[in-house]
Image (cartoon, rainbow, N blue to C red; front, top):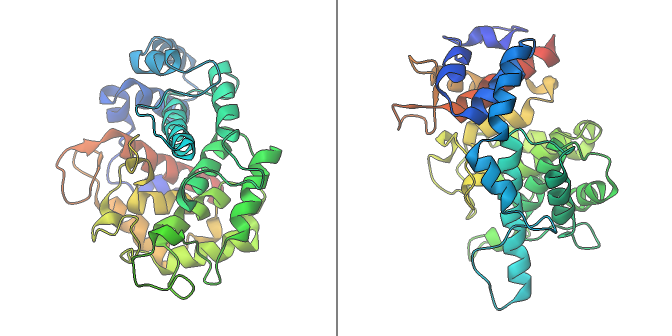
Length: 317
């Protein structure tokens, strides 16, 4: 890959026209916001369409007065109910973010408050470390950096960084492996790292830079924990709103995590990841959900990758 400040020039074909023409409404709206922000007529038209977009209307209408959503199944153990409610909150707030919702909306404000209420006094969110990292990343994307509860969550996570620069949830270590000496989890660390990389101040911290090196050095390594141990996990570029799908993304998520840190653009493994993903572009201009498996392009994966390239161009210019 040649050194270039305009990373979008490396694409074989500009996918923006096909995104605007054929993608689902939320992706067309996000594409217009990111690539055609000067076209006020188009933006206004798509914004108005989003206001009556049925999946968005349904999600907002099913939110409860306290900002939560009803979980499908009730458990006997209350802590389990809280954990499942937290996971439901992550999924639905992620979807609202993709629907173009922002924190100036009352529904989003209530949702953020409900999410923060799941924190323990020490700053910990429910479930495992990758859930904690994702919650911080999500809150950062809603513009919550600087909020005392969010910052407390970052401090809690920073204290759990291991000597090798990564993170590891004890319950994800396969039986027989000693927790103290086993290597940190690749995917767990990627989520913790991504949370730090989107933090305007902490992205230059020692915690973040140490995590970056762990992630770079383990690119394409197969996970030895129970989180995405599949051989082809790096090829799974999509993410969705299912319990596990929320954390997918493979090489695309790896690239996205490094976008705010231009000092790593020249690292061989980062260049390798970008080059490989560029090679996956199809004749349609789109990129696949799973590299090497699907002949049809994925609109969301395509938007995320071209957004990353655009942001890299902006940062490195």
